[in-house]
Length: 210
Image (cartoon, rainbow, N blue to C red; front, side):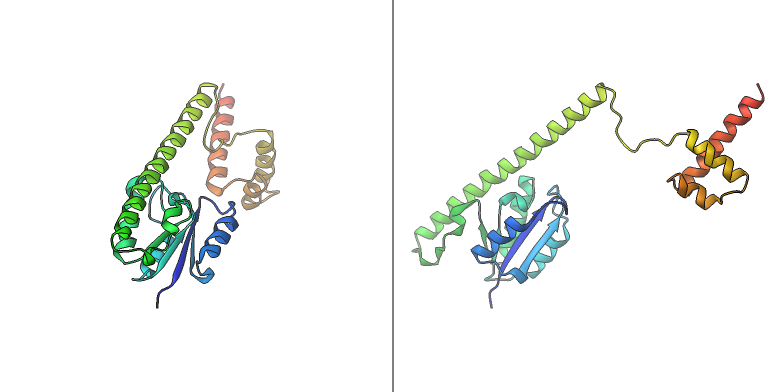
């Protein structure tokens, strides 16, 4: 028996999936057969997508809100669609209206023409999705380079030996607080705490020999 599936992808769990979900169900996707990924589209190594590909069978229908939900690169999009089509699955893409047309009522001559039109549109949309990804990556790179020129530092901030550290260090040396309490009070990991202790004591030793 054929089934109606839906695939949803957003980049992070903070993003809302309600719009995609409502539209897919409205078009005919079974809510119990919705597969949802919270991941970027940089590749196809996504848990829900892989489970979906395993679940799809001949005669099923798959609903997708936008083509780039499958991926961001043209190669990945075409590859996934090829695998789906080879299973005998019909794909309905909401932002490509011609894929929503029921071709079962079309004649033998019209159906191949509609298939060709859909394939051409998918090719165009996949190219646009990849172009948008490259444009976004370029903007990000330019933004980072511009920020670096302004002296902006990226990555995790380096922990400093400041007055707060010295105060807790002195309490720790006097055994007024345990080592565990010391690094917890400073919001440090154990290894980081002892690294700073080593640096601070080396600095004290250096000053005492002057």
